[in-house]
Amino acid sequence: MRSHYCGELNLSHDGQEVTLCGWVHRRRDHGGVIFLDLRDREGIAQVVFDPDTEEAFALADKSRSEYVLKVTGRVRPRPEGTVNTNMGTGEIEVLGKQLEILNSAQTPPFPLDEYSDVGEDVRLRHRYIDLRRPEMQEKLVLRSKITRAVRNYMDAHGFLDIETPVLTRATPEGARDYLVPSRTHAGSFFALPQSPQLFKQLLMVSGFDRYYQIVKCFRDEDLRADRQPEFTQIDIETSFMEEEQIMGLTEGLVKKLLKDIKGVDLGEFPQMSYEEAMRRYGSDKPDLRIPLELVDVADLMASIEFKVFKGPAEDPKGRVAALKVTGGAELSRKQIDEYTKFVSIYGAKGLAWIKVNAIENGANGLQSPIIKFLGEDVTMQIMERVGAQNGDIVFFGADKEKVVNEALGALRCKLGADLNLFTREWAPLWVVNFPMFEEDDKGNLTALHHPFTAPTCTPDELMANPATALSRAYDMVLNGYEVGGGSVRIHEETMQQTVFRVLNIDEEEQREKFGFLLDALKYGAPPHGGLAFGLDRLVMLMCGTDNIREVIAFPKTQSAACLLTQAPGTVDANQLRDLNLRIRRDPASAVSH
Ligand code: ASP
Image 1 (cartoon, rainbow, N blue to C red):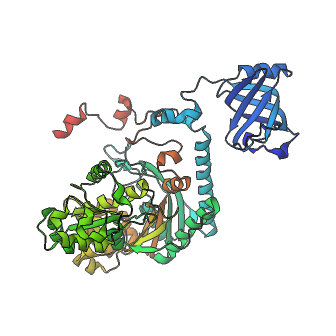
Image 2 (tube, rainbow, N blue to C red):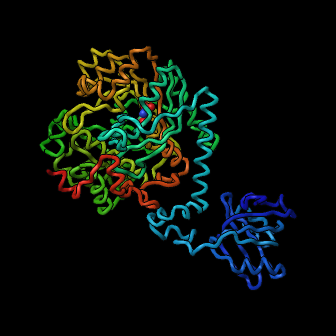
């Protein structure tokens, strides 16, 4: 129907007759002349109708916001003084000759320009309208550009795009599974893949030594702003490559995306051990744009009686750390109270602080409720260790190591954002030398990545010292987000069984859940490894937003529901019967029986 997109018109089309199809973005009646801003996915063009073209004028007069029109007219430069430099097509307009109303529209639930006045739930309920907004269109266009560039890169490096099943067995990545009941096998369930991990490993056993897939994954976990229950991975696996090669290849992909799409040169990614990242930043995905660091001070607490600090200082699983914030002495009592509330989300019981007003006066130049408990000597030693200067504030965390890391790690990022301490726009890095396992709340070991990650030691060494074993995993971090994670995998049955044993998965359960993998490892499995990127997160960062829903056409809410389709929904009794399922009438009380 159309000859051009609205958004592509410019002075080079001067004098041409064009036919446009799109939506009425805005309609203005300027006493005898009607202006319609017509919008399509490429942008907006101004179309002018004057009463001489009677029929078209009458239809333009009838048109309302979001009507769908087909307009034919001639492109001409805008009269002097009316050029709009904010608009891609701002130097031209189209003099409308013919107009066809392809469809009318009810008044939309919110005017596109005033989307921010309505809640996100209204936008999600009418997502097809929300997606008409130019900003949303730009984000999805960028997303498509990124996936195209990914495919080109992977193709150029000899990777094959191979699909893996969606109805499958559990693929543990540390989350809950989404389950699908089987009709043909009463009482049995498929799991939706948390990742294609095991299938991509099996493809390596089959000899497809370079695999990739842009693929949906499903994880039923509590959602945060940067998570979705179904999300997209760029999933990659290779055979006969060591970690440095895999990291080089995947680093190359991200560099190329940033260079080609954003014009950003990321440079070579630094590497940092997990241990160093946790010690200096309290996080395994440190945001290196923020120049704040945690400094350990437990050793200085030996002589004091102050239990809040002394207890964790003497606890082998405890940590006492300081976080110096340049210029933070200006924070008000109220702001400090808010940060105290903030760290309590992470389990911190308080947030001690010292303001540095005049360090040249020793402890007298400091302001703090805790100096009297620490004593002047210890206080000044701490000030020296963190390099405190006038105008700084020093915050403290003293608790179990996990609590201190999470609380001060998050506080560091929050202060970085609140006080705008960012030193640069992009900060990539690799985090390496992860432990194989971590302890859960009950003291059991769980896989830090997933149970198919290779350790750096032999099976015997692993069995002897699982808690201190390191893995051959690597995470790619960009601006404080884990954008990719991967590892060299286990490709020998004995090692795989050892890991299962450490995880308390006995032989029967191993056979039941992972028999197919253990069998495959017996039949000539090559050394292999890979990585998966979170595509949504990558797009989110490249779009400059911190809300993952902004870069997904039809996202779920924080409670994992789709407001547009009202999913999940109930099903009728026949469907349940087919699936051999019965719904408990009162799920809450049923659980306690
Ligand atoms: N399957 C892993 C994940 O989804 C990534 C990988 O190890 O390749 O996190």
